[in-house]
Image (cartoon, rainbow, N blue to C red):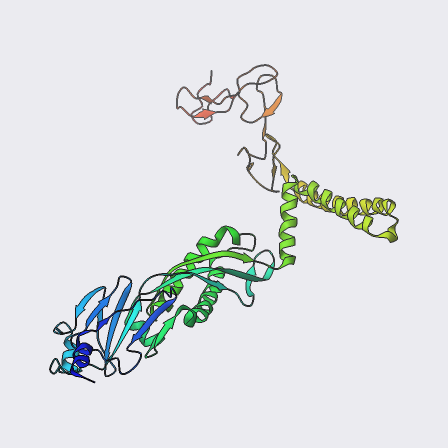
Amino acid sequence: MGLGDFLKRQFRKVIQWETDDKNAIVWKYPLERKEEIMRKSTLVVREGQKAIFIKEGKLCDVFGPGTYELDDIKNIPLLTALYHWKTAWESPYTGDLYFVSTKQFIDNKWGTSNPVMMKDKDFGMVRVRGYGVYSFAIGVPTYAMNELFGSTGGLTVSDVDNYFKKIIVSVLTNSIAESGASALELAANYDDIAEIALGKMREDFGRMGIEIKGLYIENLSVPEEVEKMIDKRTSVGVMGDAMGGYAQMESLGAMRDAAKNPGMGGLAGAGVGLGAGLGIGKMFAEGMSGAVESGEKCPHCGASAKKGAKFCPECGKPMKVVKIKCPSCGKEVDEGTKFCPECGESLAPKVCPKCGVKVKAGAKFCPECGAKIK
């Protein structure tokens, strides 16, 4: 090699990372030992990147976005202590340089390869499948080097995607249980479940130098048989009155099944099926009606209340009505009535003119002081 080639080799180095691969996380320089980092080199770290210097297995420094002249290494104290630079015509540095992308890696898919079990208050143990997307970024490059890529020549999203998915699914399983949502309520609680999961994931991923930016649940589904039970409950609610709706639904179901069965004689069989369906629906409705009638009705507004209730849940008035007699004509009226409906006598409590104690309507003397009540 001539002197010109030697000089050219010394001064031509501009070290930077340019890539069109949107999934590349880490790139190592030099890839070959002959590509030495020269004293006269210029290091360019672009926005969304960081550079890590390694010498003799030790971390020298981490550079953020900017341009750095490696001829002046006073800003790399550890590198200076590890290796004394010689003359400008020598190759003084044979360590490694890692470029790390700090941008956000978005639209990464996650999903359950096998259904996860959840305990539901309505249906017992239920198998749940789900899928969605997540995004992440390198938060602390030195942690990521120690835990993820080490001394490898590079790292891409596909290298860590499967591992990250397993962590996400594991945490989501616990988060669904912690949310307390039933199978009927899952769709309305996606955001709450994702927020609980994010709080748990940040610590696990943080130890690897990874920052989870977002987690989104696109779907959580239950087995087909559970979906049918949910649809059945919804159908009853849409039909209006729960008991009448159930009877109608059972009747229609019986007609449909009978019509499909040639052994029952077509429409004649459908009539039998209709009777059976009506019978089942009626029994169910009567059983539920009996449960309601076993309570009490409010004597004021007619609303149903539990047996033994002291006050109406609808109007708030006492369930038990106390009768009193009109002091003028003797007719029985409800306690609290202001005037007798028979003779018009005032039934409001009176006040003793002497001591101020309230006395019952019709009383002639005060029970407290004995004064005469006018």
